[in-house]
Image 1: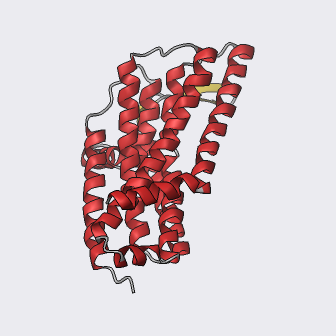
Image 2: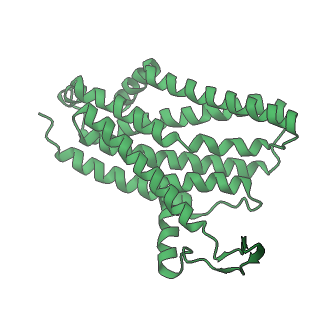
Length: 280
């Protein structure tokens, strides 16, 4: 296992995609923070340093999907996995080493954004306005979300031998997670009572009274939507961003529990399937 990890990280440090993802994250935050600083100076808009941290976990799913597909897919196309088996490494060790490298690479990408936020943000926007423990808890929760993403995309990459198909499957899966979670969040955000509105009729101003919103989710249906919004990694990412801008900054306890469940269950299933996979 140690030899596999050493070889994996040796490849990681030389991997162009890995460094491009870090560069992408840094550029995004340099542009974002510069634009916000300009807005704060020109229009008096107030920005808090706390508000920048959740963005790292908003689109890390796409970066993890791309990296896992290309990094692990290359091992199939180059015959590296078969060589590892010939050298006596177990399939479980091969699977876990791939998962660990993908997870660590994504964590480094996220933490690179944390570094640039602190380096640029403190001089521009000042120190944190919320307790440090809140920010650390948010980052810790985000790292567990990354672990869940890494588990899902490692599962796909290790079980599909064709590199292009692996890439397409990972990206499509990520899109489904993101847009599915976005749709769930929009439905949950529907107000229970629709506010009244006004219009002109025959030259007179007519007003309607507030009324129950027919699109508001109730009962069991709402409970099911809330469960999936909390369970899916993308749903958790969206909620991290919302919580960070709201007065209530208490993170939901189920977030890390759900992420750990996804990571452990998907990894266990992936190992069992990979041990039975025909690699000839």
